Length: 221
Ligand SMILES: O=C(O)c1ccccc1NCC(=O)[C@H](O)[C@H](O)COP(=O)(O)O
Image (tube, rainbow, N blue to C red):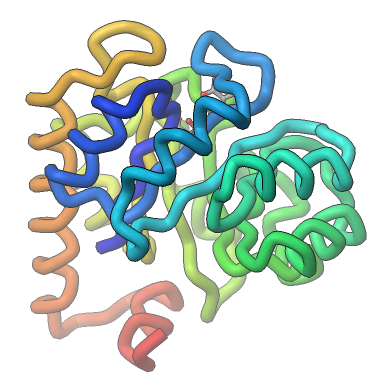
């Protein structure tokens, strides 16, 4: 189970999340209480192991500006959370090398998400970074055979249920592992990563696959 910790604002929190077993970190460039500047992110990213996927998080930003910010910060890719068109997304993907495209759960566009050409489809609540949980049955609108990252109000207490229900490729969290906006709580981060990884192991040992997301994992994606 791939685990991304989003809304990182400090080197301490970045190193903490990595030490706890996170696979990816997100840095919010969109207007937010967690907003960070490219120069600050660059200083953090330099201290991280190369295998950690680092993503710049944007919302309705000009595609060329997304590319510039990702490159200035030395990030591994971009995560787009707004009303980006498939053309915007493909422009960014071609220049930054890795793209996560977010869709609000239940959005019609989720069924057409292949058009965005993203490496990973993120299914989130309509208000990203808000800590709001959505009805997980809405994640069923995702295309089959794609890497699905699930977010939206996940916590150490509910992430196991969410994984069992949605069977995603990975999970993404911000609010649920914070002590205050932009500050991560070490105990919550530890508990979240452990619960997500344990639930992922349970999925692998489950011999009764039911969903397309599981099929993709079975095929070695
Ligand atoms: O965190 C923000 O404030 C934010 C603002 C604008 C676009 C995206 C933003 N965050 C994205 C994330 O933190 C995660 O991808 C995800 O939405 C986490 O949500 P939650 O765990 O519910 O806080």
